[in-house]
Length: 228
Image (tube, rainbow, N blue to C red; front, side):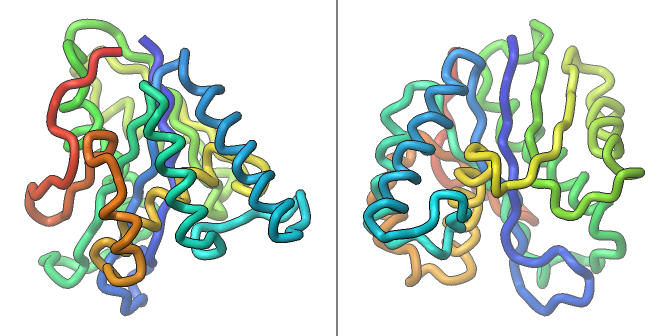
C-alpha cells in the first residue's frame, strides 16, 4: 500500500516565540485519490483567482481566502472518498521543557502525527508494508538536513513494515502543500483563535478529519478505522 501525506505547519516553533500554539498538519490519501484531490483544489484555486482578479502565479495562503471560499474547498474535498485531513496541535505553555532545537522538535511532531493520528486510523496497518510518501513545505530546510526527517522516521518505526520517503516542495508551486496549509491553519485557529474560524469548523464533516492536542490524548474528529 502506498500512502501520500501532505504536511505544513502553523504558528511558530522557534524557542523564542511567544505564541502559545504550534501545529503540524495537512491531509493524507491513497494513491488512487491523490491526483483527484490536487486537481480539484487547483480548479477551485483558479476560480477564486479569476473571480478576485488575483494573478494566476500568486500563491493564496490560508489567511487570504474568504470564509465562503474555505467552506467551498473543505466541502469539495470531503466529497472525495480518500481524503482525510489532520493536525497535531501543541500547547507550548503546558510542556515541561522548552523547545531547544526547532528541527528536532519538528521531526518529533511529525512522528506523533503518524503514531497518534494516521496509523491508528488505518485498518490492518501493521500487517502489510506501507510505502509512505511524505510531501512537506521546504520551510527553509538546509541542504544538509534534507534527509534528517526521512532517516528519523525510518529509525523510529524500524520495528514496523513502513518505508518513508520525504520530499520537500516550494508551496508556491505545489497545490497539495497549499491545501495542507489551509487545513493546518484552520485547526491551529481552532485553539488559537476560534472566533475567526468558528463558522468553518461548524460546517465540517467531522468524519473526514482527526485532530489531537499535545500534551494529552484529546482527539477531535474521526476515530473509526479507514479501509483503503
